[in-house]
Amino acid sequence: VHCLYLVRHGQTEFNVRGRIGGDPPLTAKGRAQAQALAQHMRHKEIDWVFTSTRLRSHETATPLLAERPGAHIMAFKEFNEIWAGDCEGMLYSEIRERMPQVTAGRNANKFSYAYPNGESYALLGERVQRGLRRALFLAGDTPLVIVGHQAINRVLLSLFLRQRSEDVPYIYIPQNQYYHISLTPRRKVFERVPYQDDS
Ligand code: F6P
Image (cartoon, rainbow, N blue to C red; front, side, top):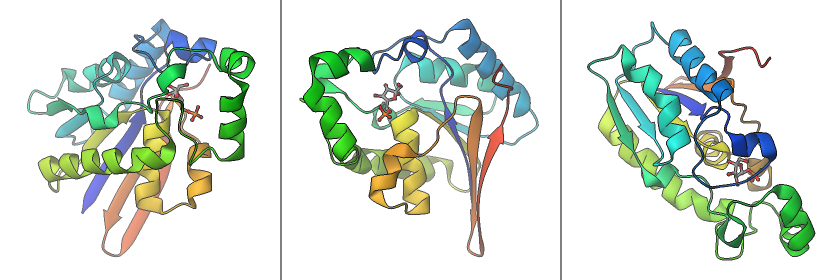
């Protein structure tokens, strides 16, 4: 039996501006989202919390650990966001203007398109699977949380749901809701749970 809570990190200044990649901290709203998540989960049994090595992921996870002295937290680089290569740190609008071939390439086939010197969704599959295997090995049968990123969480969900690959880069990954995945041999439940109003 596996119980996995798949969370996206809270809001960052990069999210507000439409800037990709980087290692920005949470905004005040992002920190409030992290607090709301911890409050929402306060009665749930959680023994393991996995993050990426990025600040925004770690800051989102921290309040979850506050009242769980026995819980473990571990940062995996396998869960770091898709690497945008030459486009790291750019605004989507800057990419459109200065590197129109990137935008066109992504629009034509977002799953297979790799950023120049960077990654595609297709390439993420292997490392995300490696991270998930390590996380499931450590957590065993106990409930776990993964605090990931937009593209990472799309790929993680697709590992359980077997989406058509061309749909994977468009799965909805909000910052005020998490996916609860509960698997038994006879019952697979995927539930999107809001933990804070998006006001
Ligand atoms: O915008 C936040 C972000 O996590 C970026 O760092 C990343 O490049 C992007 O989302 C992935 O989403 P998409 O593939 O839709 O651009």
